[in-house]
Structure formats: C-alpha cells, structure tokens
Length: 320
Image 1 (spheres, rainbow, N blue to C red):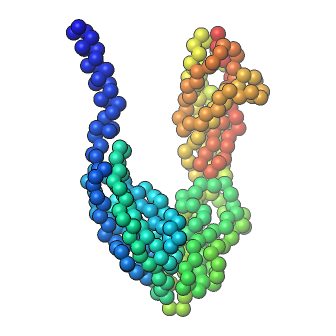
Image 2 (image 1 turned 30 degrees about the vertical axis):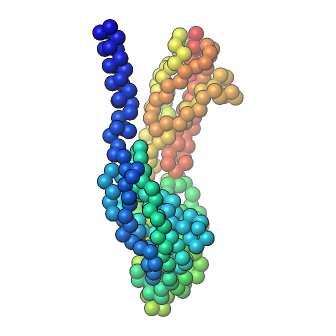
Image 3 (image 1 turned 60 degrees about the vertical axis):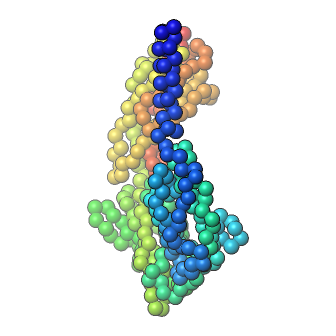
C-alpha cells in the first residue's frame, strides 16, 4: 500500500508541475480596469491620441480596442505598459481595455467616447508611416514608400539616407509631395548592401511635423551552401527515429542575418516525393520514419532578406 501511495504522490506532483502556470497566475477575473485618458467626451486636436490607464496588479498585458463611429474596430492590440499612442484621423471614436494574463482576464471597461478634430498646427502631430515595414530585410532595390496623410498638411518632404559606415543622403530632401507616397526605383541609389533610413514630414504654411522615420536593410548576398554532418551518406540504421545535423557556411555579405534552414527528406533521389519539409533556425532536425526503406535528405539556407543558398549535397539513409 505504501508503494501505491508513493506512486500516486509522484503522479500528483507531476500534475502540479504541468498546472503551475495556472497556479502561479493571479485570478484577475473580478478586477476592474480604470482608464485615465481619453475620458468620456474628450476632444483631441490633431492626429495623435494617447491612451492611458491605471496599472492592474496581476495583469501581464492589456488588450485595447478602438472603434469608429460605425462601431467598426480599427485597433485590436495586446500591449504592455499603461499607455498606447495611435495616429488617428478626425472623427468620432470610442475605446475600451481589459487586463489579461496567461490564465485569466478582466472584463472590458465600458466604452469611452472621444472626438478627434483637425488642427492647423502640425508641430504636435505625427506622420504615420505605412510601408515598407520598419527594420525590413529585403533583396529588392525598388520601393514605393507610403504614409498616412494629415488633413491640414499641404505637402510632404521625403528623404532617404544610406548608412554604410556613416550616414549619407542619397535621395532628397524631396519637397512639395502632395500624395501619401513616393517611389524610388533607381538601382544606383541602393548601390551597396547597407542600412537605409527613410524620413517623411508634413508641412503647411505655418508649421510642420517632426520627421517620422523607419529603417530597411538591403541584403543581396545569399548564404553559403550548408554542409551535411550526420548521419553519414549511405548510413544504415534500425531506428525509425533519426536526428539529422548540418553546418552552415559563412555569410560573406555586408549584412549578416539569422539563417533559416529548410530540410527536405524524400523517398527518391530526385526529390519528386518529399515526405518531410521542415524549417528551423537550428542546425538539427529529428524525424521518425513510418516505414523502413531508403531515403534521401538535403538542406537549404535562407536569410532574413529571402536570399537562398544552393541545396546541399544529397545524402541517403537506409532504415532497416
């Protein structure tokens, strides 16, 4: 009987281990969130709204929702901290928020209505950049830069800066742009793989915004071909589960990014019938074969800018 009790205690301990996340998280279900701003009836001048609320003990994150006058949700985001800035057009809106953790969440606050009005003073407003996304890695050299327009802006100024050991303006400043976009398709502008910073500001006759800026990285050099390590070519094994390992070559480009490896396992040497495709940032992959037979495997490396290496050499493995 003592042995049975001891075994039961072990299983119970394991059960507590798996449930520890739920045990450690504070139950915030009945807690009430408190907003700070904007409160009911607030009028915001300009296009930048700051949402803030009181910190809730036990909440790891907060889910904020913003809806327009038709009650369509335009923002539904999880944020940390107790504030959230958002660039928004003139109009009527409402917002609400709730606290969440791994296991529990509060109810949403009652929606608070506020209004955004256009302002001629641009100095406290912000140009919201749209595309390309910030910190984009790419092998392209042609871009359409886009941003949200401000009702009271008369024009926009665009600038593109190359940072290759030192900042150097390569486009602009281009003034008098009256739309929310500007195209750069001259390959000579992106003549080296490097960091490029693009900036936009809005201008009218009496004021202007600060520059909004984002960064993109041009990388056109592919990673080197991976080298297979184990199992050896034509290896035989009686185990259905096998671990495949390989090594990446050096990246000789001006920019080095994280490598994603794609392993393929096929039942024929020409890879017409691929039975496993997996991606990993590691240099190992475990696979369990369903049946015995001879199989073939190879690996390809791809960097963050979508430059891909050649496939590695092909190795075979015989599962007996």
